[in-house]
Image 1 (tube, rainbow, N blue to C red):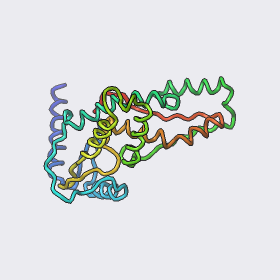
Image 2 (tube, helix red, strand yellow; image 1 turned 30 degrees about the vertical axis):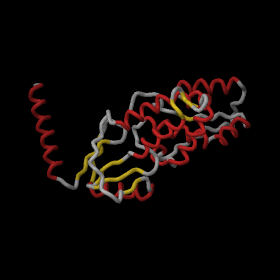
Image 3 (cartoon, one colour; image 1 turned 120 degrees about the vertical axis):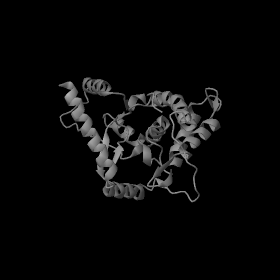
Amino acid sequence: MLETRVQREHKIVQSIQSLLRNRSDIVIRRTDKSKVFYIGNATDFAGKAEEYMLKTNACQEPGTPLRLIIASIHAPATLVSKFLNDLLAPIYLNVAREVTFINGIDVIRKLEKHVLDGHFQATTNFIVIDVTDLYRMIPREGALHALMRLLKKHSDHGKIGTLSIDAIMRMARLVLDTNCFAYDNKYYKQTRGGAMGFTFTQALANIYMREWEQDLIQHQVVHNGIYGRFVKHLLNEKC
């Protein structure tokens, strides 16, 4: 019985593979940061991709030909990204811990304290804000300036550990300036934000957002409110 099922499912897989090979109007892609696949109309997919690139203006086709680049988990920029995240994430968490939600339990604990402090009212509102495409859309120069200010404030004689601020900034620019990808037989260079999946991109976005949200944080403090931002995978092992 099991053998019959295996044979039947094998034929189904072969049928799907044959269909995908012979149907140029079907596109299959792995979805961003997950283990599932997107299957859809190739024309619709191309239209949405073009619309996104035009709307965000986050990438451009280089004027000069690029050499073929093979992405690898051990690529130099990937390792530099992980190194920067390991260096910067503890600094960020140290200065932003009071307004950072690590997980759901962390949220509950802060809400319980808010209630015990007598600030929870019948008129209290719960508001959720989502920044669309945060990692891909942060302004690079603004984010790098925020990083520079953070490093200067928490450095010891111009150094973080054994590294000078200048060395850290040069590594940061290296990671941001080497994000290239291929789409529709063309090479593109990402000109805004950073690559999804690079841990440094996440750390840099959080550092930038920390400065951006200061007015809102102070407003909540004055009005006995709570403000917190959920930071996911800041210290994870991804590259």
